[in-house]
Amino acid sequence: MKNEDFEIKVETQTFKFIPRIPVSLEDAVRIAGGSSNGEFAVVGHEKPRATIIIDSLGSIVIHGISNKDVAKLITEEFLLSVGLPESGLKIMKGELVVSFSIGRAVLMQLASERFSDIQYDERLDAIRIEAKRYRCSIIIFNNGRGIVLNQTSQSVIEMAIEYWINQLLDVGALA
Image 1 (spheres, helix red, strand yellow):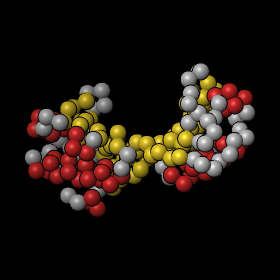
Image 2 (tube, helix red, strand yellow):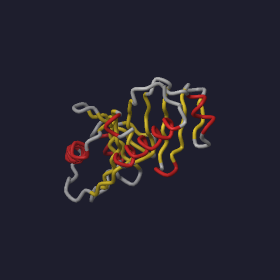
Image 3 (tube, helix red, strand yellow):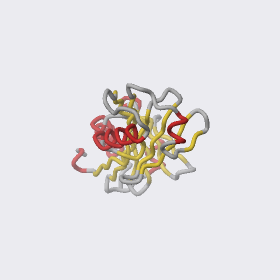
Image 4 (cartoon, one colour):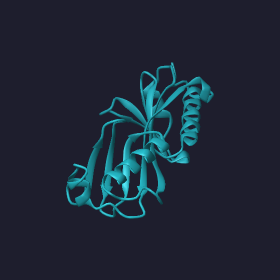
C-alpha cells in the first residue's frame, strides 16, 4: 500500500518560541489574563483557537495549531500584548499528532500475535505499534482509523504508516 492509498490529517503540532526577552509568568497572568501554577502560565487565544503556555524560563509554547506561520503570528501578537518586542524569535517545532484512515478493518488479535512491536491495548480497544525505526507510536483501531504520536516530521510519519500497513497486509491482518 502506498501513501496515496491512505488519508492522513495533521491534527495539531506544538511550536516552541524563545523570545529575545523572556516573558515573565507574572506578566502573562497580570497583563494577558492567564493563570499560573508557579511553573507555567497558560493563556487562551480565541481566533484562531490555541493555547499559549509560558514556561519558567520565559519561552512560549503554542498548542492547538498545526501551521508554523500561524503559531508565529499568535506568538508575536502575545508578545506585543505584554509589551515585549516580537523580533528575534527562535522557533522549535514540536511533536505532531496525525490521524489517518487506511480504509480497511484491522484484525487486531492477529496483528498483535505476529509482531513483537505490536501490543493490544485493552483500554483503547486498539493495537499500539512502537515503530522504533521511525521513532513514533502508532495506534490503530479495528475500523482502520488511527493516530501517530511522538514524531516531529510529517514525512517520517507517512513512511511509518506505509511501512506498518504493508507489514499488516503481508501477514493478512487487514480485512
